[in-house]
Image (cartoon, rainbow, N blue to C red; front, top):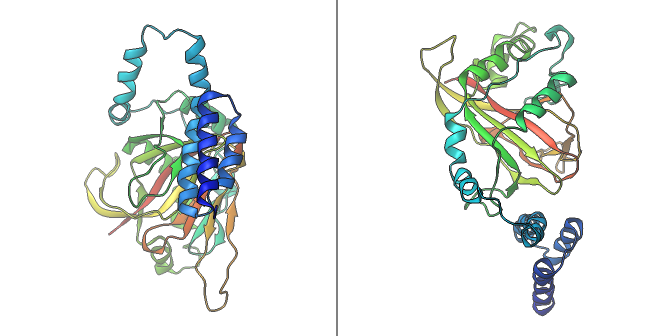
Length: 316
């Protein structure tokens, strides 16, 4: 708002309404869109409004319902959830049934930048995984990010699991599609140029994301990480780095598109954004690191967006 007094009045009215009445979350988000026009302030406000709107029901219930006897224990478990995530390896469901790699295609959405694998996981397997992942101790990301980080509001689970990473790489069609589909042209260098090196497998850092209505991930870049790669089948550590982000969509929802913003070129000085809607069972690979495209996860408006995340690891 251009008038500071009007802006203060609007914010004050919002805060008073949140704490002394029961507006709907949708109405709160509508107000937030009209309060601030500067992008960074707007994103921080969206995150704040989301937490206010979701905590509203909890406050209302706290007035009418007694606290459970185990309230203090629940709070202590929440504070140690991160340690639990790192120490307890999930009993992942088997990756069955799967579609043969011969029936799948590594589809270039933007050559050398974005590839899709539709039907990478079957619908029944996706539903099995969503049911299983719902039982994990997901943590809601903070509404106010650290300096230099993008605003993100979602629920996540993170675990170091080299065994599951190798299973996801070897038992699905991923390894064959990545290592063979681009080598059919009999150009050995093409494979390494595309993936940034010889593909070794997937990052053992497995992440699970759940985006509910109102949650989003603002514009950002994905970094590349150097690591010492090993797996159950290749236990000897090897110098490596991550080069591509792997996203596996386990559900379909309204909103929640992954939107990429290509860099301008001489041929196209104003390229259109590339939007990828969540599609159950679809895998998305996009380049990260120095050549990563600016991208975002738009706000989910209906349903839930479940994503399984890892990274392609290549030799250094």
